Length: 361
Image (tube, rainbow, N blue to C red; front, top):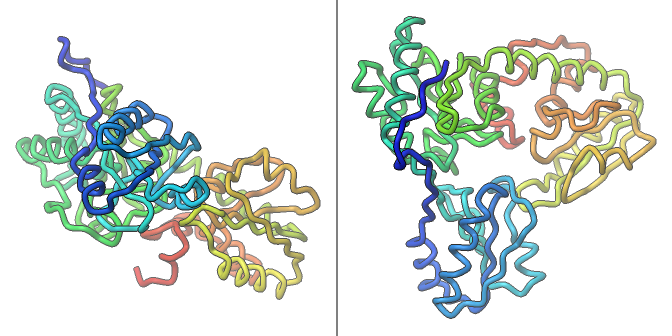
């Protein structure tokens, strides 16, 4: 499902940094030195903030290390570099998650013509499938565009949820990350489908698996709207296969992330103790950047459980040996204890970050 690109010079997608938030932090905190971090796709925005800091008399430095979310803040680098604070661009949250790091919203401004094209495709798809209510979600950089698209879809006769701008934990009700879906979870029984505004197929696929509700990806760059059902089926099969492969392992490497929001040492010990109680050998590792190449260096273990970003396990970064995320590790323990693996349910939960497990559905 795709639409024709609008014609004219005003149809390009622009990036807008919330410079007011930067100014507020400068007035309140009065830093002498400040860092700027941004995901790879927003490095041009880092230059804009760098120039603003120079004009305000603050010594700036751009931290070029990759950053993937607000679990990946730069507190350690700030301390090592003697920075008073760090502006993290593009990983915005309504909550204050760090005293040292300031989360700054960076919005992709989508021209109205593009939104109209996308709204038309989604509305037509909804009519074709008999959907009356759609949960319209977005990654954090599309908040303004999401509001505009919601208005257009409502004008076509669709009910669009969530309706307001309330926060649920560290996210807005309409906001998703690669491991957190609390808003989508809260309305999953009130909608016929979800539609995610953004360019990340992984995020849309994760919503489908976490909620069990059909999900469309709405890509404002390509003007394509597609159902991620096949992607979700592939990811679920791959994740389940990794669990079954790991069940035959004799030794496990449990990997703890060193990033600020990924240090789950107590959880590592708990899982390790459970595995040892089941007759498995356990080795503990830590790493800042967890990649297939780094895991490949750790020879002598049969499988890994990575307690950092769940995407590492779900994307199967090293194919030679199974790599499990936390939700997969839970199912592994169930399997080793004689319980079955329910393919339709084992990733269905509001958070793939471990703090969400054990909560009532």
